[in-house]
Length: 158
Image 1: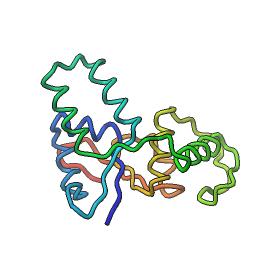
Image 2: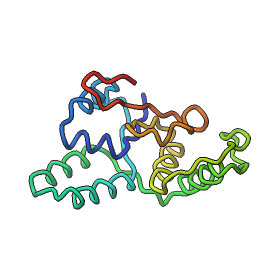
Image 3: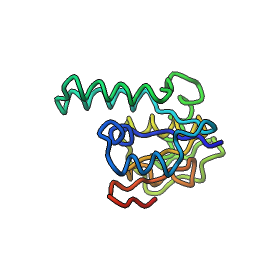
């Protein structure tokens, strides 16, 4: 059994029926009954905001809701996620944390967007591999969480 957290860009790819997203769905066997696949409430919120920014009509919004409803959405108001958020935020600012999953402080500090902090915290707390097309999580891969980068190309490589 594998656990995957889908980042916003994967959800957007599924809604757009992008070839690279369909490849990722098959490559990581996201439809398998023994795999646990979910997203964060933050990603769901980002997707809803994007529909407004992109001016999506009713048909595209319906497809988005269909995609979102395929995956469980994890609420961030859980102690484990809140604690993971705090640890990642402090550690990425180059400060030591008591959480044993983090090595000595990262030097220099690496700035992260707030939503990315929440998404990373959700992946860390839920012990899931983060699937993303976003390089903003690279400095956390192999440190405190597992991140798989999915290329947005016709023949993706991970």
